[in-house]
Length: 376
Image (cartoon, rainbow, N blue to C red):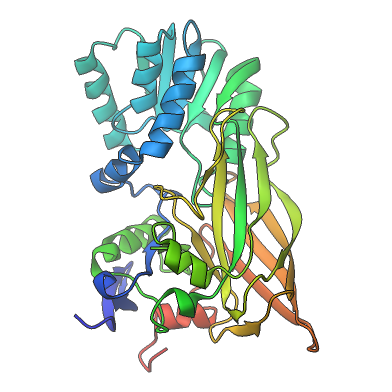
């Protein structure tokens, strides 16, 4: 199979050209960021379950905090993993909330077969729209996204704290932050424009269908976490944190965070790899999706298709803005900044990524990813 070629995928009402690739011939390729949309399937759940770092941290925290408490599990999933873990650890009762109907049905069956139907109640719907008989002692959730708040953790868990959890109740996870590192995408791969492997098409199609139209969906970079050599040649700076979310403290899902990246090696600055750090419990070391293999994968924020030459000591100063979209749950993200290089004028750069806005093929990156009839 050729590394890069043009194919077609289905969008509501039409076919859309898409840049495709063979993942076997390149260390870095694209996937859709799917956690923000109701498109989870058995494969996606399996990837999460096999993430040992993620699973072990959550399991330890649940065992520590669940005994004797009433528990709310938001986004329990078809396997009801943390609802069952809490019940087995000695929770008095667990309310397990799941918005995807098929997943909720499967969770009920799984819980019944495990013998915990008397202590776990599955509630189908959004946690922001349900009521509980009384506030609970503890909330566990796995709604941290590829960016810290992209799956709605900030707004959803703020609502849970205000309505569903007792004052002083425990939240698992404890804290998250979105992270950013300067990236040379050309050095990461083969210098060709990145694309989706054909097996990813159906996920892109399902995201388009859930929104009702094609749009410039958020994409993630597969292959950065697992290969230190790729990271070494493509990461041009250290990482900084933005979008802090304090789940056991004051929680504000909207804001503007200023940051500065200083380049530590020469390269062509094409954009940012955006990841997340997650503290499952307060005393834990964070899970870091930019440098550790996990089921969370770095988002690509393209800033320059050609790449801008940089040297050690050059700086990229930027503001990272998080606002809630009109659904009141999922954030829209925007970044504006200036690249400062020795002996050269500042270069203004920007990026935006919405949950379901209208724009399609707005920037050169997306015109390359979804080329028109005449080519990218």
